[in-house]
Length: 292
Image 1: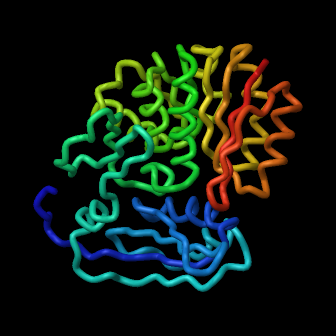
Image 2: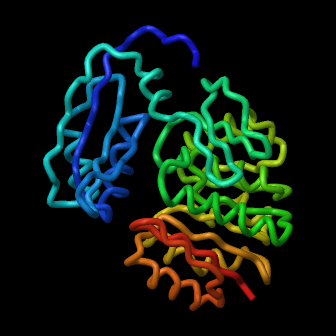
């Protein structure tokens, strides 16, 4: 690990909520914190959502954003963690992780990749972007599984975040990936991660409004679509996904709770997709569906 940098004040925003409401609260905190994550507690179906930032947060703005995400709002703690090396704290919370053949590590890691693994250099940012969250882990498992049985020419990563799924798809043998996100910062980080992993030349990146982003039409149709977002937008996007996928193409859908899976499956079946695989990971479900 690299030497610690100059210590800086670190602030933590923390709340405890149900698994169902954690994604909305985490998304709200991303506007204030460069590092957002959540973890299970000892109580079933209850998680702890944490945001870490170097500057003192605007308490009123944070609480307003959290209330807009979901009300009533549980108790929120906003407190300094003292003089700490913020980057070192972030690095220590993100050690190398093996998920199937994928070996996910940060730029601070000096360990050699395990023999036969597919290394992914992704620096800690959010739970959805580092492989820590079950939805991301489930998508990585799906990528490994489907690329064993068939070859994919061009994939679309819709809502790319850190770019982890796009880069994983390229590591697994997909020839090219178009990666889209509504957040320009996500596209910037995806480009950085693409360079770090030596696959940037095979990536087409653009920030924009989902399937309406011009680059989506430029490279359509796709053999594979990766979509790790949330249940409601997944259902809304079903018709658009059906328009840009090839016949016989595969779509991986994630970011949905087990209780939401039936609704997502129904929305895609209405567009002609058939369910091929369902992966349940705790409270979360990852779906593999195909366009006949």
